[in-house]
Amino acid sequence: MKIDAQGKPCPTPVIMTKKALENIDEGILTVLVDNFASKENVIKFAQSQGHTAEFSEADGVFTIDIAIGYPCELPAKQQGAANGNTENIVVFIATDSIGDDNGLGKTLMNGFIANLINMDTLPKTIIMVNSAINLSTINNDTVAALQLLADKDVEILSCGACLTFFKVEHDLKVGEITDAHRVMTRLFEADKVIRL
Amino acid sequence: MVVGFETSDDAGVFKIDDDKSLVQTVDFITPVVDDPYKFGQIAALNSLSDVYAMGGTPLTAMSILMYNCDIDTTLIQQMMQGACDELRKANCTLVGGHTVEDDEVKLGFSITGTVSNGKFYRNSTVRSGDLLIYTKPLGIGIVATALKGELTTEEETSQIETIMLRSNAKAADLLKKYDVSACTDVTGFGLAGHGFEMAAGAKKSIAIEIDKIPFIESALKYAEMGIIPAGAYSNKQFMDAEYIFSSSDKEKEIILFDPQTAGGLLIGVAEADASKLLADLLAAGYPDAVVIGNVTDPTTTAVTFI
View 1: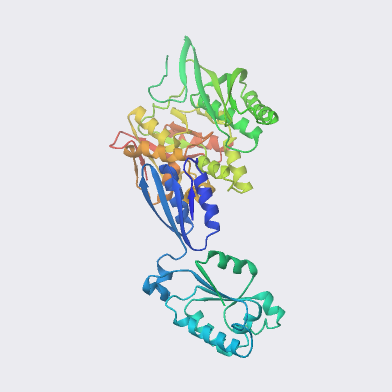
View 2: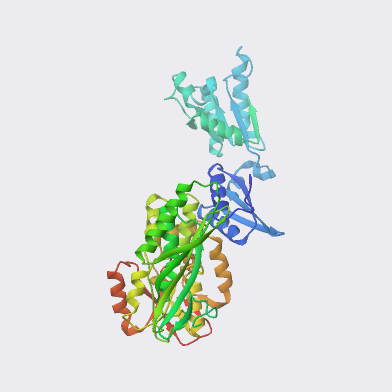
């Protein structure tokens, strides 16, 4: 994300940075300013919020890169970092069966979930809605597979309204309950969404 | 002419006969608070302060007003009402003024005052051994910047309003009883800048103790967040070769350069009189007045913060 605060008087560049940061959980925010005071202030603000900031200058324009979240540590922990891939992949599952549920569909789903762990880049988040919530509750095969992924810091989210609808809200065995806002946030932030 | 440009003093002093001199100054500011009446008051107090800092008695005022014609005229009326109320309290008569169209509101006054028998305070006549008293807490510019960014709480806003609305008139009056060598009001150049003028003008050095300076609490918070007016950075840059900062409180350094609107008086007073003057100031409604440092023979650096 990039914001251009050139020509804006103090404290506008800091306020613009503050507003932009409120909407970012992780990533790089680039801020352009055209004077020393604004550059100092934006960097001070980023640091006061616990972020790291670096800047470069060219032709009187300061380009400040603010790293939000865990720019160094987190990707290193993820498997994907081994091949330099830190793509934000979200797996979105809306059913407990791949294709029609003719007996084969559920078996396929078990196999797919079990194989996620073998991918070069792990998904950052797996979201289960509608009947897919069976995968994190009553299906012991997929619960075990999802737990392995959770142990690798993959975020496992099950739709709260769906758990209630299917009356399994007390049977959640892996991951967290989520709401529509968080689901949409994850989907919008994703580099790639894989829908099963 | 008795006092001119040379020592960057608060006002010019011009002798008109054997026992009377005119003190003349002009200053105008952009809005620092949202309330138009209070802004008018602050603009008037900010302009009057230069005359007080010289030890003068305000006599007449000429307004300088700039505004965009699209603005609601009641706002202008409220601003001028606030200003006139403060001028009246100061027994200062508004005799005229000038208005110019401009995108951003600006208001200020050219104030003419008088001093009798050549008794006035320069900013440049401190003596070795004098103590330095400052009468208001520091950080007004930073909190006003946060206010402009709509970050301040109601309590923080009302705190800086109270500080800016505290007239320097009574403080200046108290000085006359004591052995005061020099006085200036701390405004656009910050405590460090005006302190430097005081030291350099007198060819002395001054030492200021960071632990003694009263800082506005919210200013510390906003300084850390980078809510700092551009003027603070340019003041600091201008002063770079003229000061030493040897305190471990690094985050307070920039606040020393924060431009103050309607700041307090920085007073050089004989050590023997300092505690009496301080007691008088505290009793007269300046709860933040404090001895912040002292004057020494010149060293290699004009201003040292310890």
